[in-house]
Image 1 (tube, protein in one colour):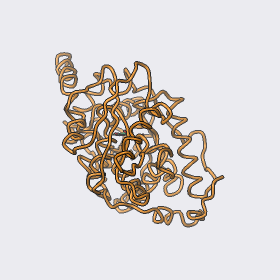
Image 2 (cartoon, rainbow, N blue to C red):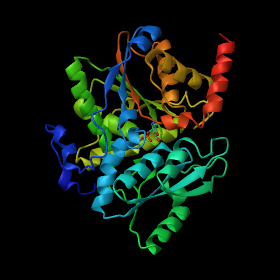
Image 3 (tube, rainbow, N blue to C red):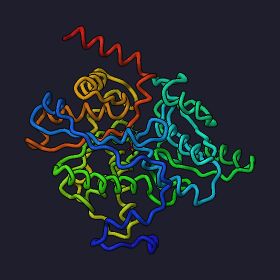
Image 4 (tube, protein in one colour):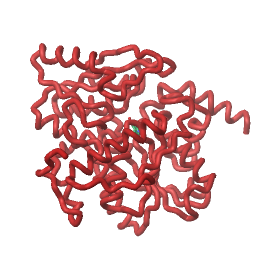
Length: 368
Ligand SMILES: Cc1ncc(COP(=O)(O)O)c(C=O)c1O
């Protein structure tokens, strides 16, 4: 086990863990916890709440801003002056990283992978990246290839980093999604921020006198879920964290989350305290795969918009909502359960998906 002397904590004082990590103060916290009475009534049998992590700030917000609150402090500590990262053409992570870099006077460099069948026009996140003046390198991705793990992007990353160094910059390589501990990120900061989010949520639940039974959210590169799981273990063991996979098959995403959970406990100097059932992920709502819109997702966007006036996104939270609605219908949650849905952002992607959304909604209307 790596030395963790600076962060060794006792189980009696878990609330002090997070305070030891520097933050950049870029994120708007705490995010609101709101009841969704209309949606609860419509679906029946459970009480639904929504944690508004779409309101974290940084160019339309999202879960990545929580991660960047910690990661950008690391960037500053390492005295970097440019931030290099990668993602898909409509990456929320890249957009929020670009905004965070700009806020701190640093240069954002984005490597964006073009995938067949996904929107590539200069709209949504890509438009925002361009307005933010990020340096953008576009790469065609071969069919069936993934860019989730750093070894898959090593070659292009090396070229970009060398370019940055030749230009006299000191680049920080931020891992995709702020998730794996790789590149220049030496601590699992993308999960640590969600350990903190649980302690924030506990305070809100206590203030509202609500006992939260489940937290349901979209899981992509795994660190949001890993942080939530560790946070629940430390601060609120009665809550079950339920991830809806929107990118990876069950085996792959479970491996991602498991790795990051272990690294987070290790970082805190604690033995991993995990039962198999703690990593709870559903892959059934992936539909045609990452970023592929389907009828159910378009209907879920409309359902939440019509009942609560809240906009979800077509790639992450829309699919997670499909999972939540279906699991409620199947009686997965105990009767009368209090369920928090994490709105992790992503709404700029509504615009490049406009055509598909409207086609599915109009198609749905015809069948009503
Ligand atoms: C809007 C949104 N929700 C959820 C996620 C998933 O978060 P994670 O990658 O930590 O699993 C992402 C990641 O890109 C996202 O952009």
